[in-house]
Length: 404
Image (cartoon, rainbow, N blue to C red; front, side, top):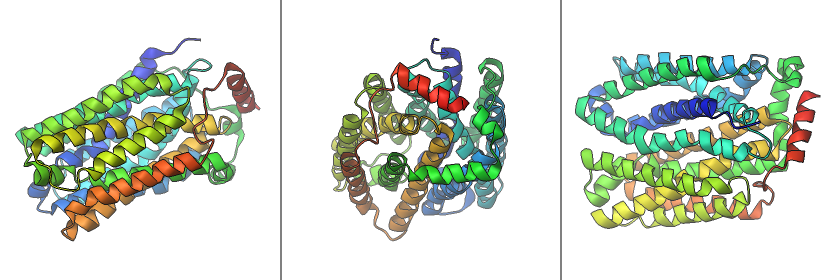
Protein backbone atom coordinates (compact mmCIF):
# COMPACT_ATOMS: atom_id res chain seq x y z
CA UNK A 1 0.00 0.00 0.00
CA UNK A 2 1.27 3.45 -0.94
CA UNK A 3 0.36 6.88 0.39
CA UNK A 4 -2.76 8.11 -1.41
CA UNK A 5 -1.23 11.48 -2.19
CA UNK A 6 -4.14 12.99 -4.20
CA UNK A 7 -6.57 12.26 -1.37
CA UNK A 8 -4.11 13.55 1.22
CA UNK A 9 -3.68 16.78 -0.77
CA UNK A 10 -7.45 17.26 -0.79
CA UNK A 11 -7.58 16.70 2.97
CA UNK A 12 -4.75 19.17 3.47
CA UNK A 13 -6.51 21.75 1.32
CA UNK A 14 -9.66 21.32 3.38
CA UNK A 15 -7.71 21.88 6.60
CA UNK A 16 -6.28 25.01 4.98
CA UNK A 17 -9.79 26.38 4.50
CA UNK A 18 -10.98 25.53 8.00
CA UNK A 19 -7.93 26.95 9.79
CA UNK A 20 -7.88 30.10 7.66
CA UNK A 21 -11.57 30.79 8.22
CA UNK A 22 -11.37 30.16 11.97
CA UNK A 23 -8.39 32.47 12.54
CA UNK A 24 -8.95 35.11 9.84
CA UNK A 25 -10.53 37.55 12.34
CA UNK A 26 -7.08 37.76 14.01
CA UNK A 27 -5.78 39.71 11.01
CA UNK A 28 -9.01 41.61 10.33
CA UNK A 29 -9.76 42.87 13.84
CA UNK A 30 -9.63 46.57 12.87
CA UNK A 31 -11.64 46.13 9.64
CA UNK A 32 -14.45 44.06 11.16
CA UNK A 33 -14.53 46.36 14.18
CA UNK A 34 -14.95 49.46 12.02
CA UNK A 35 -17.32 47.82 9.55
CA UNK A 36 -19.80 46.53 12.12
CA UNK A 37 -19.36 49.16 14.84
CA UNK A 38 -17.96 46.94 17.59
CA UNK A 39 -14.70 47.00 19.55
CA UNK A 40 -11.60 45.02 18.62
CA UNK A 41 -11.95 43.08 21.88
CA UNK A 42 -15.45 42.01 20.85
CA UNK A 43 -14.19 40.87 17.47
CA UNK A 44 -11.59 38.78 19.29
CA UNK A 45 -14.48 36.94 20.94
CA UNK A 46 -15.37 35.53 17.52
CA UNK A 47 -12.66 32.97 18.18
CA UNK A 48 -13.92 32.29 21.70
CA UNK A 49 -17.54 31.67 20.71
CA UNK A 50 -16.48 29.52 17.75
CA UNK A 51 -14.21 27.41 19.92
CA UNK A 52 -16.80 26.97 22.67
CA UNK A 53 -19.43 25.63 20.26
CA UNK A 54 -16.90 23.35 18.56
CA UNK A 55 -15.73 22.01 21.91
CA UNK A 56 -19.23 21.36 23.27
CA UNK A 57 -20.60 19.79 20.09
CA UNK A 58 -17.68 17.66 18.91
CA UNK A 59 -18.20 14.55 21.04
CA UNK A 60 -22.01 14.22 20.69
CA UNK A 61 -22.01 15.03 16.97
CA UNK A 62 -19.09 12.69 16.32
CA UNK A 63 -20.89 9.92 18.18
CA UNK A 64 -24.13 10.65 16.32
CA UNK A 65 -22.43 10.35 12.94
CA UNK A 66 -20.24 7.29 13.56
CA UNK A 67 -22.41 5.07 11.33
CA UNK A 68 -22.15 7.35 8.31
CA UNK A 69 -19.63 6.61 5.55
CA UNK A 70 -16.50 8.55 6.39
CA UNK A 71 -16.10 10.13 2.94
CA UNK A 72 -19.72 11.29 2.94
CA UNK A 73 -19.47 12.75 6.42
CA UNK A 74 -16.30 14.68 5.60
CA UNK A 75 -17.89 16.11 2.45
CA UNK A 76 -20.96 17.16 4.48
CA UNK A 77 -18.81 19.09 6.96
CA UNK A 78 -17.15 20.97 4.09
CA UNK A 79 -20.55 21.72 2.52
CA UNK A 80 -21.70 23.27 5.81
CA UNK A 81 -18.47 25.27 5.86
CA UNK A 82 -19.26 26.72 2.42
CA UNK A 83 -22.77 27.81 3.42
CA UNK A 84 -21.59 29.30 6.72
CA UNK A 85 -18.79 31.31 5.08
CA UNK A 86 -21.16 32.68 2.44
CA UNK A 87 -23.55 33.79 5.19
CA UNK A 88 -20.70 35.40 7.16
CA UNK A 89 -19.58 37.37 4.10
CA UNK A 90 -23.07 38.81 3.71
CA UNK A 91 -23.75 39.36 7.43
CA UNK A 92 -25.53 42.71 7.94
CA UNK A 93 -24.79 42.81 11.69
CA UNK A 94 -22.19 41.50 14.12
CA UNK A 95 -24.80 39.12 15.57
CA UNK A 96 -25.39 37.51 12.17
CA UNK A 97 -21.63 37.17 11.71
CA UNK A 98 -21.36 35.44 15.08
CA UNK A 99 -24.26 33.08 14.31
CA UNK A 100 -22.86 32.11 10.91
CA UNK A 101 -19.53 31.25 12.51
CA UNK A 102 -21.28 29.18 15.15
CA UNK A 103 -22.97 27.10 12.43
CA UNK A 104 -19.53 26.51 10.95
CA UNK A 105 -18.24 25.57 14.41
CA UNK A 106 -20.80 22.75 14.63
CA UNK A 107 -19.24 21.15 11.56
CA UNK A 108 -15.70 22.05 12.63
CA UNK A 109 -15.45 19.58 15.48
CA UNK A 110 -16.74 16.68 13.40
CA UNK A 111 -14.39 17.60 10.54
CA UNK A 112 -11.31 17.52 12.78
CA UNK A 113 -12.36 14.40 14.68
CA UNK A 114 -12.71 12.32 11.50
CA UNK A 115 -9.85 13.70 9.43
CA UNK A 116 -7.19 12.02 11.57
CA UNK A 117 -8.67 8.51 11.31
CA UNK A 118 -9.34 9.03 7.59
CA UNK A 119 -5.72 10.05 7.11
CA UNK A 120 -4.59 6.93 8.99
CA UNK A 121 -6.66 4.74 6.65
CA UNK A 122 -4.96 6.33 3.64
CA UNK A 123 -1.48 5.50 4.97
CA UNK A 124 0.51 2.25 4.80
CA UNK A 125 1.83 0.62 7.98
CA UNK A 126 4.38 2.75 9.80
CA UNK A 127 3.61 5.94 7.86
CA UNK A 128 0.64 7.40 9.74
CA UNK A 129 2.81 10.21 11.07
CA UNK A 130 4.12 11.01 7.60
CA UNK A 131 0.60 11.09 6.16
CA UNK A 132 -0.54 13.32 9.03
CA UNK A 133 2.33 15.72 8.41
CA UNK A 134 1.32 15.96 4.73
CA UNK A 135 -2.26 16.80 5.67
CA UNK A 136 -1.13 19.29 8.32
CA UNK A 137 0.78 21.21 5.68
CA UNK A 138 -2.65 22.69 4.98
CA UNK A 139 -2.75 23.89 8.57
CA UNK A 140 0.63 25.58 8.13
CA UNK A 141 -0.27 27.04 4.75
CA UNK A 142 -3.33 28.61 6.35
CA UNK A 143 -0.99 30.55 8.62
CA UNK A 144 1.54 31.13 5.83
CA UNK A 145 -0.84 32.20 3.05
CA UNK A 146 -4.44 32.09 4.21
CA UNK A 147 -4.43 34.53 7.10
CA UNK A 148 -1.87 37.03 5.71
CA UNK A 149 -3.37 37.07 2.20
CA UNK A 150 -6.87 37.24 3.64
CA UNK A 151 -5.72 40.10 5.85
CA UNK A 152 -4.17 41.94 2.90
CA UNK A 153 -7.28 41.49 0.76
CA UNK A 154 -9.48 42.56 3.64
CA UNK A 155 -7.48 45.74 4.10
CA UNK A 156 -7.52 46.45 0.37
CA UNK A 157 -10.99 45.37 -0.77
CA UNK A 158 -12.89 44.79 2.47
CA UNK A 159 -13.21 41.99 5.00
CA UNK A 160 -16.37 40.64 3.36
CA UNK A 161 -14.49 39.76 0.20
CA UNK A 162 -11.87 37.84 2.18
CA UNK A 163 -14.52 35.74 3.90
CA UNK A 164 -16.43 35.29 0.65
CA UNK A 165 -13.33 33.87 -1.00
CA UNK A 166 -13.18 31.25 1.75
CA UNK A 167 -16.64 30.10 0.65
CA UNK A 168 -15.37 29.77 -2.92
CA UNK A 169 -12.27 27.86 -1.81
CA UNK A 170 -14.45 25.56 0.30
CA UNK A 171 -16.68 24.82 -2.69
CA UNK A 172 -13.64 23.82 -4.74
CA UNK A 173 -12.51 21.52 -1.92
CA UNK A 174 -15.96 19.97 -1.75
CA UNK A 175 -15.86 19.05 -5.43
CA UNK A 176 -12.34 17.64 -5.05
CA UNK A 177 -13.33 15.57 -2.01
CA UNK A 178 -16.27 14.04 -3.84
CA UNK A 179 -14.03 13.27 -6.81
CA UNK A 180 -10.81 12.02 -5.20
CA UNK A 181 -11.55 10.66 -1.74
CA UNK A 182 -12.09 6.89 -1.86
CA UNK A 183 -15.22 5.40 -0.36
CA UNK A 184 -14.73 4.62 3.31
CA UNK A 185 -17.43 2.77 5.16
CA UNK A 186 -17.51 3.03 8.94
CA UNK A 187 -15.56 0.34 10.73
CA UNK A 188 -17.65 -2.67 11.87
CA UNK A 189 -17.38 -1.82 15.56
CA UNK A 190 -18.61 1.72 14.88
CA UNK A 191 -21.46 0.64 12.61
CA UNK A 192 -22.79 -1.79 15.20
CA UNK A 193 -22.43 0.43 18.26
CA UNK A 194 -25.37 2.39 19.66
CA UNK A 195 -25.31 6.15 20.11
CA UNK A 196 -25.13 5.73 23.87
CA UNK A 197 -22.15 3.43 23.56
CA UNK A 198 -20.40 5.87 21.23
CA UNK A 199 -20.93 8.71 23.69
CA UNK A 200 -19.63 6.58 26.55
CA UNK A 201 -16.59 5.59 24.48
CA UNK A 202 -15.75 9.23 23.80
CA UNK A 203 -15.91 9.96 27.53
CA UNK A 204 -14.32 6.79 28.89
CA UNK A 205 -11.38 7.14 26.48
CA UNK A 206 -10.13 9.73 28.97
CA UNK A 207 -9.48 6.86 31.38
CA UNK A 208 -6.56 6.13 29.11
CA UNK A 209 -3.84 8.05 30.91
CA UNK A 210 -1.97 8.82 27.72
CA UNK A 211 -5.07 10.28 26.03
CA UNK A 212 -5.84 12.33 29.13
CA UNK A 213 -2.25 13.54 29.21
CA UNK A 214 -2.37 14.53 25.55
CA UNK A 215 -5.56 16.52 26.14
CA UNK A 216 -4.19 18.34 29.18
CA UNK A 217 -0.93 19.20 27.43
CA UNK A 218 -2.82 20.37 24.34
CA UNK A 219 -5.15 22.61 26.34
CA UNK A 220 -2.31 24.27 28.24
CA UNK A 221 -0.16 24.84 25.14
CA UNK A 222 -3.01 26.18 23.01
CA UNK A 223 -4.39 28.46 25.75
CA UNK A 224 -0.95 29.98 26.11
CA UNK A 225 -0.52 30.47 22.38
CA UNK A 226 -3.93 31.97 21.62
CA UNK A 227 -3.90 34.26 24.64
CA UNK A 228 -1.25 36.22 22.75
CA UNK A 229 -1.79 35.26 19.09
CA UNK A 230 -5.44 36.39 18.98
CA UNK A 231 -4.26 39.97 19.57
CA UNK A 232 -1.05 39.87 17.57
CA UNK A 233 -2.27 42.79 15.41
CA UNK A 234 -2.54 45.36 18.25
CA UNK A 235 0.54 43.85 19.93
CA UNK A 236 2.91 44.36 16.98
CA UNK A 237 1.31 47.74 16.34
CA UNK A 238 2.36 48.71 19.87
CA UNK A 239 5.80 47.12 19.73
CA UNK A 240 6.87 47.83 16.16
CA UNK A 241 4.38 50.31 14.72
CA UNK A 242 3.31 47.71 12.12
CA UNK A 243 -0.13 47.99 10.55
CA UNK A 244 -1.78 47.51 7.18
CA UNK A 245 0.52 45.95 4.56
CA UNK A 246 3.39 45.68 7.07
CA UNK A 247 1.19 43.58 9.38
CA UNK A 248 0.20 41.33 6.47
CA UNK A 249 3.86 40.88 5.56
CA UNK A 250 4.74 39.94 9.14
CA UNK A 251 1.91 37.40 9.30
CA UNK A 252 3.15 35.99 6.01
CA UNK A 253 6.65 35.63 7.45
CA UNK A 254 5.24 34.14 10.66
CA UNK A 255 3.50 31.42 8.70
CA UNK A 256 6.34 30.89 6.21
CA UNK A 257 8.76 30.11 9.01
CA UNK A 258 6.16 27.75 10.47
CA UNK A 259 5.84 25.96 7.14
CA UNK A 260 9.61 25.59 6.88
CA UNK A 261 9.72 24.23 10.43
CA UNK A 262 6.99 21.72 9.55
CA UNK A 263 9.03 20.51 6.60
CA UNK A 264 12.16 20.12 8.70
CA UNK A 265 10.55 18.31 11.64
CA UNK A 266 8.07 16.28 9.54
CA UNK A 267 10.56 13.43 9.13
CA UNK A 268 10.70 13.05 12.91
CA UNK A 269 6.95 12.73 13.52
CA UNK A 270 7.18 8.94 13.38
CA UNK A 271 10.25 8.73 15.63
CA UNK A 272 11.06 10.39 18.95
CA UNK A 273 8.32 13.05 18.81
CA UNK A 274 8.56 13.77 22.55
CA UNK A 275 11.87 15.66 22.47
CA UNK A 276 10.58 17.80 19.61
CA UNK A 277 7.37 18.72 21.46
CA UNK A 278 9.46 19.73 24.47
CA UNK A 279 12.03 21.67 22.46
CA UNK A 280 9.53 23.49 20.24
CA UNK A 281 7.28 24.51 23.13
CA UNK A 282 10.27 25.77 25.14
CA UNK A 283 11.43 27.85 22.19
CA UNK A 284 7.92 29.25 21.69
CA UNK A 285 7.73 30.22 25.38
CA UNK A 286 11.08 31.98 25.22
CA UNK A 287 10.14 33.97 22.12
CA UNK A 288 6.84 35.05 23.70
CA UNK A 289 8.62 36.29 26.83
CA UNK A 290 10.80 38.48 24.64
CA UNK A 291 7.68 40.16 23.24
CA UNK A 292 6.69 41.56 26.63
CA UNK A 293 8.83 44.74 26.43
CA UNK A 294 8.56 47.19 23.55
CA UNK A 295 11.47 46.00 21.40
CA UNK A 296 11.20 48.13 18.30
CA UNK A 297 10.56 46.97 14.71
CA UNK A 298 13.59 44.76 13.95
CA UNK A 299 13.66 42.82 17.22
CA UNK A 300 9.87 42.40 17.29
CA UNK A 301 9.87 40.97 13.77
CA UNK A 302 12.68 38.53 14.60
CA UNK A 303 11.01 37.29 17.77
CA UNK A 304 7.61 36.87 16.08
CA UNK A 305 9.21 34.78 13.32
CA UNK A 306 10.90 32.48 15.85
CA UNK A 307 7.58 32.12 17.67
CA UNK A 308 5.85 31.21 14.39
CA UNK A 309 8.41 28.57 13.52
CA UNK A 310 8.34 26.97 16.95
CA UNK A 311 4.63 26.85 17.64
CA UNK A 312 3.31 26.13 14.15
CA UNK A 313 5.31 22.89 14.03
CA UNK A 314 3.67 21.56 17.20
CA UNK A 315 0.21 20.60 15.79
CA UNK A 316 1.82 17.97 13.55
CA UNK A 317 3.03 16.11 16.64
CA UNK A 318 -0.12 16.77 18.65
CA UNK A 319 -2.48 15.80 15.81
CA UNK A 320 -0.82 12.45 15.12
CA UNK A 321 -0.62 11.47 18.79
CA UNK A 322 -4.27 10.24 19.19
CA UNK A 323 -3.65 7.50 16.60
CA UNK A 324 -0.62 6.36 18.58
CA UNK A 325 -1.86 6.46 22.16
CA UNK A 326 -5.26 4.92 21.35
CA UNK A 327 -4.78 2.89 18.13
CA UNK A 328 -7.97 0.86 18.64
CA UNK A 329 -10.16 3.87 19.50
CA UNK A 330 -8.93 6.45 17.02
CA UNK A 331 -12.23 8.28 16.44
CA UNK A 332 -12.91 8.69 20.16
CA UNK A 333 -9.35 9.79 20.87
CA UNK A 334 -9.41 12.23 17.96
CA UNK A 335 -12.72 13.67 19.13
CA UNK A 336 -11.51 14.43 22.65
CA UNK A 337 -8.26 15.84 21.23
CA UNK A 338 -10.28 18.22 19.03
CA UNK A 339 -12.31 19.25 22.09
CA UNK A 340 -9.08 19.92 23.98
CA UNK A 341 -7.69 22.04 21.14
CA UNK A 342 -10.90 24.07 20.87
CA UNK A 343 -11.03 24.58 24.63
CA UNK A 344 -7.51 25.93 24.33
CA UNK A 345 -8.43 28.34 21.53
CA UNK A 346 -11.57 29.57 23.25
CA UNK A 347 -10.00 29.95 26.67
CA UNK A 348 -6.92 31.65 25.26
CA UNK A 349 -8.82 34.17 23.15
CA UNK A 350 -11.19 34.87 26.07
CA UNK A 351 -8.30 35.46 28.48
CA UNK A 352 -6.73 37.77 25.91
CA UNK A 353 -9.99 39.69 25.51
CA UNK A 354 -10.25 40.19 29.28
CA UNK A 355 -6.73 41.60 29.48
CA UNK A 356 -7.01 43.76 26.35
CA UNK A 357 -10.34 45.12 27.55
CA UNK A 358 -8.67 46.04 30.85
CA UNK A 359 -5.85 47.84 29.06
CA UNK A 360 -3.27 45.11 29.80
CA UNK A 361 -2.12 44.36 26.26
CA UNK A 362 1.53 44.19 27.35
CA UNK A 363 0.86 41.36 29.79
CA UNK A 364 -0.40 38.97 27.11
CA UNK A 365 3.04 37.63 26.10
CA UNK A 366 4.05 36.89 29.70
CA UNK A 367 0.84 35.03 30.49
CA UNK A 368 1.00 33.14 27.21
CA UNK A 369 4.64 32.21 27.68
CA UNK A 370 4.02 30.96 31.21
CA UNK A 371 1.28 28.63 30.03
CA UNK A 372 3.29 27.32 27.07
CA UNK A 373 6.21 26.64 29.40
CA UNK A 374 3.82 24.78 31.74
CA UNK A 375 2.74 22.64 28.77
CA UNK A 376 6.38 21.95 28.02
CA UNK A 377 6.97 20.76 31.58
CA UNK A 378 3.88 18.55 31.44
CA UNK A 379 5.23 16.92 28.27
CA UNK A 380 8.42 16.13 30.22
CA UNK A 381 6.54 14.72 33.22
CA UNK A 382 3.75 12.83 31.41
CA UNK A 383 5.79 10.01 29.92
CA UNK A 384 4.40 7.95 27.06
CA UNK A 385 2.10 10.62 25.61
CA UNK A 386 4.32 10.91 22.53
CA UNK A 387 5.44 7.35 21.75
CA UNK A 388 7.81 6.41 18.95
CA UNK A 389 7.00 4.96 15.54
CA UNK A 390 4.06 2.59 15.11
CA UNK A 391 5.54 -0.59 13.67
CA UNK A 392 3.94 -2.74 10.97
CA UNK A 393 3.06 -5.29 13.68
CA UNK A 394 1.37 -2.60 15.76
CA UNK A 395 -0.54 -1.47 12.69
CA UNK A 396 -1.78 -5.01 12.03
CA UNK A 397 -2.89 -5.42 15.64
CA UNK A 398 -4.65 -2.06 15.43
CA UNK A 399 -6.56 -3.05 12.30
CA UNK A 400 -7.45 -6.45 13.77
CA UNK A 401 -8.88 -4.76 16.87
CA UNK A 402 -10.83 -2.33 14.67
CA UNK A 403 -12.45 -5.18 12.76
CA UNK A 404 -13.43 -7.05 15.93
